[in-house]
Amino acid sequence: MKSKLTFFLLALGLFAAGGAADALLDGAPQCPEPWGVQAYPHPTDCNSFFLCTNGTLSYERCENGLLFDGKGAVHNHCNYHWAVDCGNKQVDIVPLSSPGCEYQFGIYPDSDHCSTGYIKCAYGEPHQAQCDAGLVYDAKSHTCVWPDQLIPFCNPEEVIGFRCPSSPPTGAAARFWPFPRIVHNIFISSLQ
Ligand SMILES: *[C@@H]1O[C@H](CO)[C@@H](O)[C@H](O)[C@H]1NC(C)=O
Image (cartoon, rainbow, N blue to C red; front, side, top):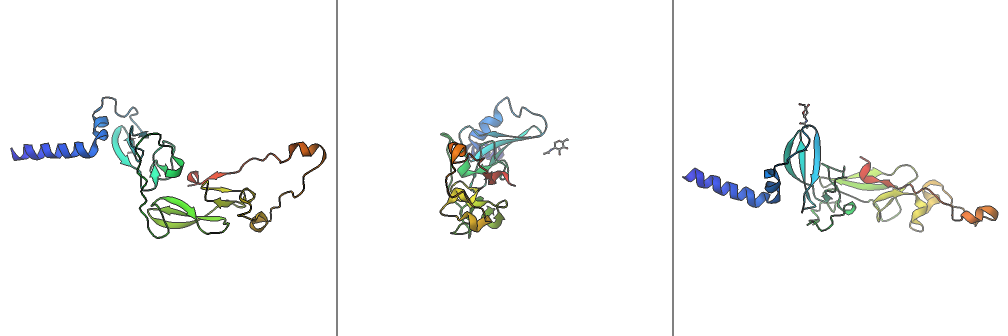
């Protein structure tokens, strides 16, 4: 009798805690693939997702600062929150801060000035990281960009000795002024 009641309360507790997770775990079509690891979005919660590991379904939560969009490879299938569009799913982005890290997982400027480096936080620990040669960190886009994209915040000549053309060209070249240029943004979320 007592064990039955305990079981009932336990089941109730699991149901209350799991909610949609249990509903999905009960659903007939579980993991479509018998082998490998696949991540699937949670229908209503942007912080959560479902993971199939060799056909076994589990409920997972992204670490603080991260959200699930199916494209994230920052940590455990999750992506930086600023890069994720949650649509109208519920989302919790309350920061869990520690010294040097606003969120447990995130990337931040390493200086008030133009810098070729940035801070990458993992589990609330700040680590110094470097942009590829010739690039500087852009806090707005969370990427490394050419310094001439951040004038006057950055002085390209100071960063790499790069000099923008200072006078408009004449003749045929003038039709292409300003020069079309391949934007070389490096998405830091893909630099693992
Ligand atoms: C999935 O199964 C294969 C074959 O048994 C095994 O080698 C592999 O380690 C398993 N993968 C995981 C993530 O458990």
